[in-house]
Image (tube, rainbow over the protein chains, first blue to last red):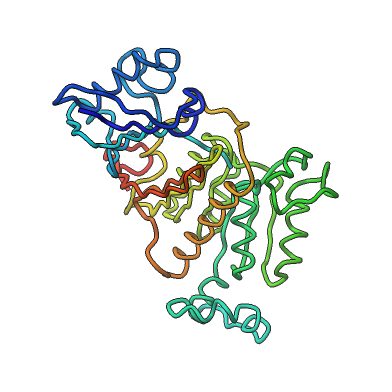
Length: 94
Length: 248
């Protein structure tokens, strides 16, 4: 299945990319998506995607369509073809 | 009892008094309210300007330091003559020229452990727009503790985010950011239309919370990306284990 991933904030800056389509096996979860993205973008992974202990970084907001997914839910939320996953790192510009 | 409007104020605010569910009652609510604005840079300065134009009764502006040339691409309360002078001084002149009916109190300090409680105590609503998570989280903690509504407005590059916190009813900023993210830097890419947009939205949210106009975000995070003009509202659930609002 194909998932559209949108990158926001400093993640967009680091990847120089606003969005990309990712192919995941059927039954793939948010956690498996983040794991795949971490392999693909290993140079920014620990800061923006998955820390060394396999958790999402502090303040990263993961949104599937319009629903926020907590760090604990990542391995339970199964994705479907056409889902849009938006990754929003914390921002505080004022 | 909320203060009556003067003849001058009825004329000044005439065009917004035509808003059906705002009217004179909403204007009197606004006149009776005090907003604390943390930092009056690109975001907070725009919020303060909108609140002053709309006729809030009292503004408390907190921002340390003197104006620099590289502030002027976005800090619209400032001007070139103000370079080297305290930001709160120039901001006060600008706001008084815009609307002399607004009472303005300034503090040439940023939010800290030593002033947060006293400043929040003096206001009815908090508009939080500092460029550091430490200040935002501190203000959130005080607002939650004192049960005061807080509007947190932030931006980065062409993106903006807005959340309003109603202590005991909605998620708070610490539900979203349990601790200050370690990789955020105080200096960030910013262009004025983006910082001003989120500042204006913060002012509108504050006016709604003060007057009861419309439906506040309350519990939802508004995100926008002006690169492609997309706006999205995301439900943010309360965290039962939140250190700040979990037991409120």
